[in-house]
Length: 132
Image (tube, rainbow, N blue to C red; front, side):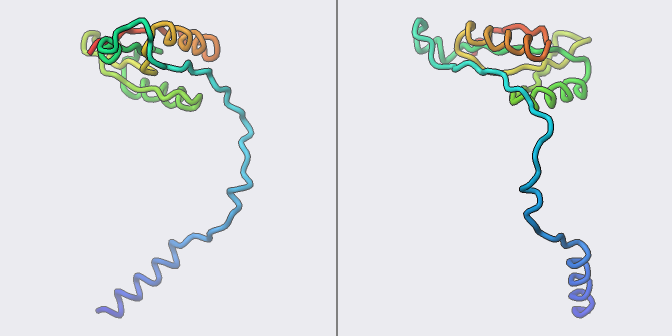
């Protein structure tokens, strides 16, 4: 029985083995992806430190009816180096999934980035204030 097990393992390892080479190192991307300028989110000097920790701003890029639609938009934004995320919205039956980007300490920084997203990608996004 052990001989058969070793034989099966040996055969399967040769069947599923893959030749390693460095050919993938020569691959170049044909399509350049434009990068959107992301504003530095350093601390806002005019707000008390306690308020800074409890308040931040995020950009809502869109709201979608299905999770699949929201997930597809997140993938598109990720291709532009925007780490977008999905937030469930129970207050709206038609648009249950918010697609959002960023965590900014100031509304001005978030607004500038939202403007860049609109200019580069065409999404009519807006800034939302989050208080913890």
